[in-house]
Image (tube, rainbow, N blue to C red; front, side, top):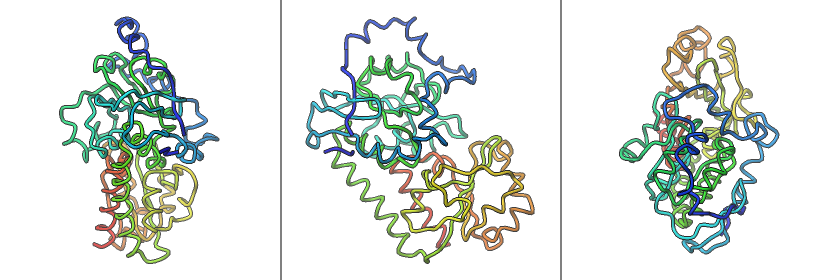
Length: 347
């Protein structure tokens, strides 16, 4: 059953043995090295990134990826962002290159052998940490260590075109590699693609049913027209999140409206601290990608502009976990966000 498209490349198992340590080092991002150019070395073109002309069509395209094989049946061909990949048998040793894919495979009942981390306050999202204590790390999402990935001898690699397109040829020499287009608001489509790559379509449907029920529970209680604002502080940036984001999809599914500043078909709108009045809404949620004193959060939250927001004055402004609300790019994270939303608007 297709999630939506078909995926890419003949797998040459013998190729891994031919890759020398020198070659791997040349194409890898060395662990611990941060020269500021890791993302450039492995990322895709800007067309599918935020602001790119193909950014908004990613969900529709990803929904066409997948396999025509019967649920759980192997071998299978899987179409994805980079072409069509043949997966000979049910994958057991899985490597994930994104936090969203980490969430996805865990939701499907698969513990990966390798995972990428982030450079946020929590390299591994706290809501998943206890499930991956003994999983090997393979670098960060923007600086993957190819040599480490090869050492783990995976039988499938799952990631995204946006983060690692330039590394796809090397990754696909190591193991069958399946890429979604990008993380973010496409988390549902990405999850279903992962389910098809792993032959766990039925489990994927069960997981999505659980999320749908959590969102419906909120929707049944939300007063029509209730607005929610999502503010995220990052080093040097202040963002109001729009529809093309993780939280944007959850808020839409839960029946909330967005203030004008966030009623946009984009990932987010960047504002200055002096424009914080654009966060005006019935409810306000905020988080920081890093320490509050390093992201500008402490300064803004202490400002008069913040204190004048009606949600703040009425006790409806809530600080939330960035590792979940910002990086919970999968069904486990989205379901937890929906459950927390219900509790917070009911408090």
